[in-house]
Length: 404
Image (cartoon, rainbow, N blue to C red):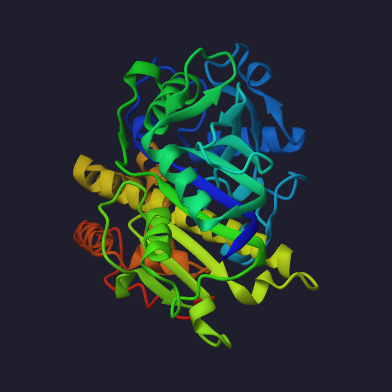
C-alpha cells in the first residue's frame, strides 16, 4: 500500500472583470487598479511597506480583505523562483502593470476543513486562504498542506468532500460552507473591497483549478503500469473531483516526464483544470529534493493560474468589444501623441497574447492547459480579431518546447 506523509493541495476559482477598463467618473475605486501608473503606484506603496493593512491603505475596514502583499523582491515571505523564471529576472514594482504581476491578499478569517469520516485522526490539515488580485480579476486560493500518514484513498475522500459537501468552516460563521458558496462569499467581498461593488460585472469560471502534489511518502508508489482499478479511480477523482467516472486512466490524461529512469513513476495527470503530480525521483529525501518538489508544485500551480487569467482576459475582451476599442485608442494616440486609458489596457492585452504564446516558464501543467481544444480555439479567435484590428502581428513565433 502507498503511504503518504506530506501532500499539498491548491484550489482556486477564477473571476474576470473589465470593471476598471469601463468605469465612469464617480464610480467606486477602492483600490486604484485601473491604469498603468495608478497600479504601479499602488504596487510600489505596498511593496515599500512589505505588507499593508487594507484599512490603513483605504481608510476603511475591508468587507473581506485584511492585508495586501506584493509578489516582488521586497516581499521577504514568498518564493520568487517562479517570477524569476517567468520574467527572466527578478520582478519589480515597475513591472506590475506591463507584466500583469498580481497582488496577494489575505482575507479577514481563518479557514478549517472538516475531515472525512475515516480520515486519519493524527494527520494534520493546514489550509490557508489567500486571494490573488489582478486589475482584470481575481482568484480565491486555498492552499492546504496535509502532514502525517495518509493514503491515496484518504486523499481522494478529502478532495471529494471539499468539492461535493459543506466542509469549510470559517471563523465567525455558524454553519460550514460548500466550496462554491465559500468562493461566492469571498467574491462578494472582493467586489466591494477592490472593484466596484454591485457595479462589478465579472465572469466566473464554472470549475475551480486544483493541483495536488505528493511531497513525501513512507512506502509504496502508484506506478502507472501496476495499479489496479481502485487506485486508478482514486487518481482520476483527484484530477476530476466533480467529473463522471471513467474506466481506467485515459491516454490524454497522462503525461510521463521525459528522461526519467522509471517513467511510470514520474508523471502528471491532467483533466480540465485538475492536476495530480507524482515525481518519484524527487520523493527520495536526499539533498534538496524536497525543496525542489515543493517549488515544482508551486510553479506548476502559479503558471497554470497565470495562463488561466490571461485566457479569461482575452475571452472576455473579445466578447465585450474591448479589442476594437483598443484599436480605436491606438489610432487616436498615433494622431495626438497622447495615450488614452484604452492604450494602457492594450499593454495588458498584448502581454496576455505574448505570454500565452511564449511563456518563459513552460512546464507540463501549463502545457496541458494550452493544449486544451477550447483554449486553443479561443486564443486563435482572439488573436485573429487582434490581427484584423491592427493590434497584433500575424505571427508571434512558436512557444518553447522544453517542458520540465
